[in-house]
Structures are given as C-alpha cells and as structure tokens.
Image 1 (tube, rainbow, N blue to C red):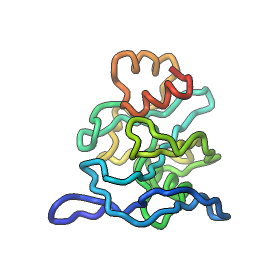
Image 2: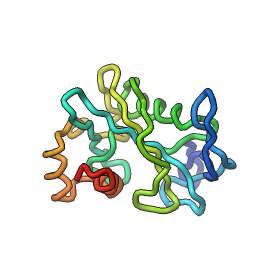
Image 3: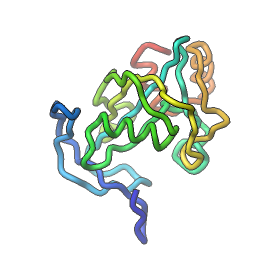
Image 4: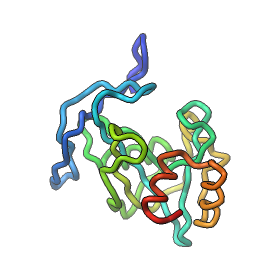
Length: 176
C-alpha cells in the first residue's frame, strides 16, 4: 500500500483476463491505481483463501476495527493482487502478511467470480496452514480468528456475523 497526501492506494491490475504460465496464473491487464476507500471505476481482481483443518472446520478471520466490515468474520485470508504478482503468489503473500503462515496444497476453487460487486472479481483458493497463526493486528482481530464448524457458521450467518462476500460465497458453494 502506498500512502499519499490524499488517500492510501495500491497499484493493481485493470483486469482483462488470465493466462496460465509455469510460474502461475498471470493477469492480463494494465496497471492502475486503486484507492482503498472506494470501489474503482474498473474491474479488478482479488484473492481469498479458505483454510480448512483435518476435522473439516474453516478458519475464519475476524476483521479488525481498522478495516472495512470491522468485527465481522471473513475468509481466512484475502486481499488485492499487487501489480507484477501471479494470482498464486498474491495468495501466499496475503497469508504471510495477515496470518504469518505459509500454505500447503494451495488449490484453485472458484473464480474469478463476483460475490457482491461486479467490478470486484475474486479468485478463491483452498489450502492448509503451515506454521503457527500469528494475526496482523492492523487487519485481523486475533480474539475471534479461529476454526469454525459448518454448524457454527450457519448460526453466525443467521445472526449477520459474516461479511457480505463470505456469506455470498458460502451460499454459492452450498455450505449454507
């Protein structure tokens, strides 16, 4: 993220498509400045990861008070794709930044799909965490970041405790 005198932004891609390469899925698109406090004028791509443990529980991240949707539960990891990274590299980078972990068995589940906004396309991955989870307090509230059973997720969804995008994804994937 770049902090300017006006607003914080990142350099990401104006998304046009994906190209498979030996390095991973490269994004076809020109660089663009994306201001983080509003939705940009062009479609752009993000990543989201659902971490699942051996008992079939999902790690959900509780959003910190400093970010959008504070206090709500969200994908295990998620974020914008910085210009110059493949989709897979961006997923691994976000996992390190947000939870301090590596990933094993990174597998593309869905996407790019629009969950709540047609300009915001998300690639969703499944993986297992490698290492001890150490949440970044600027983005993640460690008090509610833990593994949840499907039954617990149903209850949380019914009470509005999930972010709109996670709720939309779980409905689309027939988890809810």
